[in-house]
Length: 581
Image (cartoon, rainbow, N blue to C red; front, top):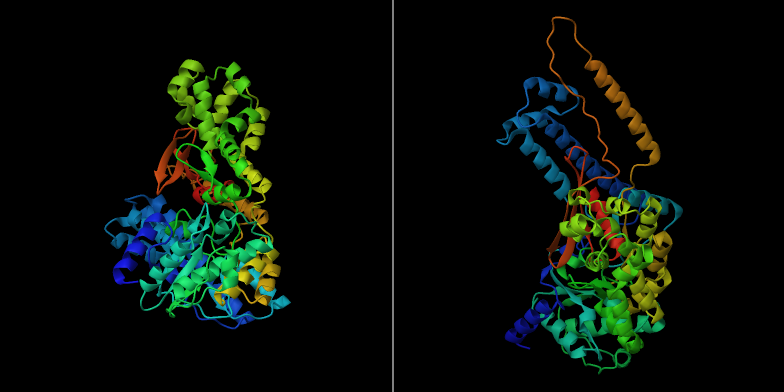
């Protein structure tokens, strides 16, 4: 394979989404290149302290930025003095006075620093028994939001070149396109002549596309065979006959060793490098719902898998999912009830399409979906009253609060539920238990000669991590900083109330003859339960997103958040949490 062929194959694979662009391995998996330390109590405490300190710095930056913003663009010396007395650091004030943009620019810089500063590097540790002391300290670290990787071998340098391959895109209607995968990985390896890494993606999707259940012995065997074929193409090792038989293809002799590592890692930002890749690392499939230009549909892996296991059911499955919005609307509220209250077929079609695209009920019945003509001419209502208030529109048309709440509950994840049920009926289960993931990962590690790290979340806990380590696998533990508890929140409410009382006392009228302005104490305003706003649909990188705003009763902006509807319901909820925060 000469340089021209290498360039042509790599370019074609990148354009088809089979291969990612070349990047640093550290951009794919942050722990790469980190120095492993013994798993001791002292090392875990140091990791926890580093994460806590980083979180405290971020909170301090945001709080300081808010204090600066309250001062405005051109504060008086008296206002600045009050802020200093309230705790604004003197060094920050001096910096704000020095900056050309003044206090606003300094506040923006602090917010940018809080948002853009990367978290501390993951703690890298050597395997060790998880005794009660270590387990307790691991839990403490994860509660603070630490990322911990325990691996039996050093990972390649973070600065080394790497690419991700989507194994599922090498699966076609006839099975594994072995030559395509082999040639692509050989070319990718040769494009990194000084050595690099190939990270495997889409493994669970490939197993599903071949018609196998992830949690079955056959699924583990197929996954291991795909890893062996990928290793053979990337590094030039032989592809054994046993694995070749599993994939119904030919074995391959060694073609000359190439300096290329093949890794199976839990890539966190897989969608950035390979947007269409359906699964990462050893994790099982969690969703088989995809969104086309106009309507929901089955993902590519699910379509191929069902076509192999139950081809006669595929047309019906696609039709059911495409009509999930209409079906869900009829089941949740009733199409006849809506027609009786003035909704035309065109209006119902618009709402059904919006629900099928993943919009919640409140947005699907809003002005921006129905349109002014339908609301004013058909429903005889003022459109401006229902910019983002679909619940209010339904209420105005005679539906009770109970009707609306029941409809929202029935529609939550409707398309996802239908798609998952169809896949399950065809023997393609979503998700898997810890034992199944460890079994599949162990089979892949044997085929790759190591280099497998599994991500352990809340579903598995430390028991899964311990079992994975005993099986010789690497483990990634990703913590999430625990939110403020109810007891702390209640105490803070009391503290804020006391602070407002103190501020009110300080604002009491002065003695006769003295001059005072009209300062106003700052108080938190709550958004109304039923609020107006704006919804804007947009497409970003091929993903449909919806920008929502919420307003106070006086029309001022109170909240902005984003819905992302290409992914499943669980991922949309996670996106909402981040966006609202």
